[in-house]
Image (cartoon, rainbow, N blue to C red; front, side, top):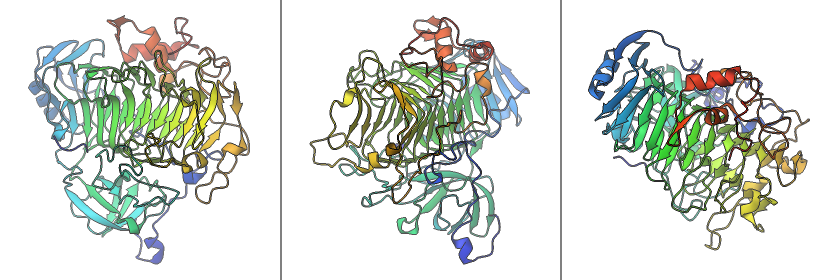
Length: 611
């Protein structure tokens, strides 16, 4: 197991500065300053998961993992390997083994059941299902590396590399640079234990290079490489010895759909891994009792995890996740249910441009300290930047500093309780530790009525933090000699959030960091908020339910004690409307979301309070 731990331009001074694509109008335009956000509309697979209709092979219960793997390898491009209804007892794992453009599909997550008692190596990411390329290129031994010598400005789409050997149009390259050696008081990419992190690096990068972005090569001319999308962070610079590394190949346009995976006895770390994958997916899947995580996004970019249900964990300890991003960019994690999972969404390595939207989590199960609330949405490592959390309903958002710092993260129209039954510690809807800088918290509905009694707990004079809506700037081991972070609260943008303490929406210009020297945000000209920061219209899975579901401008919501500002999202409606066996949903995405697509309002059996 390996450690987790151009378009053609003439050479000119203009080219050396990089080509910056003019930004189109974004949904967040006029609210968030362009220095603090990116275009999230292209997250995931362009056009969504393809609806493939050509069946290249049909297998029935009794088929072995080897037979399924052979069918995948023999399937023509754009085809489907179909697993009929029934139970498949598999003594080893399913491995796509660099087979692109193939779908593995079941008859439904409540009809096709894969029960694993063995797994597959997956280039060190020991998994029950492995969607991997054929090139073992990882942080400890990249196949190809190069110095990145020019083209660093935010938005740049043309960069210069010292070598393009092994690189081709369509390749995905990972850009990185050295961490900051000291805190400049602005962007501080750091993962040093005791300085900016409680424990030190997470391991999801080349040594001392936490900041990363995965981009696709669209053209090569000599050493000049055109990339898509353009650069997200504004701090790429030659002093940090920026570089690039890449695999010879990526697996693309492959995914799994409409089946159930039981990892209870599989012996794997991960139920599903997408390893060196681009435009891959997990859709309509029920995943049970994973070990480390249900889905491991390892060097996965522009991929999708959607319309799925994740239940349980084998350990209920610190490394027990639903979806774990270990290195990635521009992924889309949308419309999923997490139940009895310790940390449903864990960003445990770079995740530039990724969108986590409309996910529901309940019973974030943690045995180590039963009264300690674990967060449904968690930033857990250095190098996390420009991530969007939108429309999620669950316990809350944390930017911890266990493994380092995070920047330019946006939370929009989420409903975070900051509370779960039996929890009394770390019960805070928005908890931003040391190094969580330039965050944008906009249009959210926050808190638990009757529990939260204080608006914020801000360094250096905070108190009563566990009953606050916000905790800002703490290091996490106060009294240990490490100073708290005054830049975290001073760089934070808050606008249009409703909370139970004030019982009112906060439109305060004093909570807009308009006076910063860098990455300031002007006070918005009005109080208008778009329905979404990444969608142009109501998503297909939403149907006729109220849209948007959460926000200060929402009225008549069905979630109790929030002044009507929150409706149940489709994932919550699905959770409350689906039958259970032994406390586990008899989940079938097609049936569940056809229900929400026809109901003008949430069904009457939806619980008034979601937690």
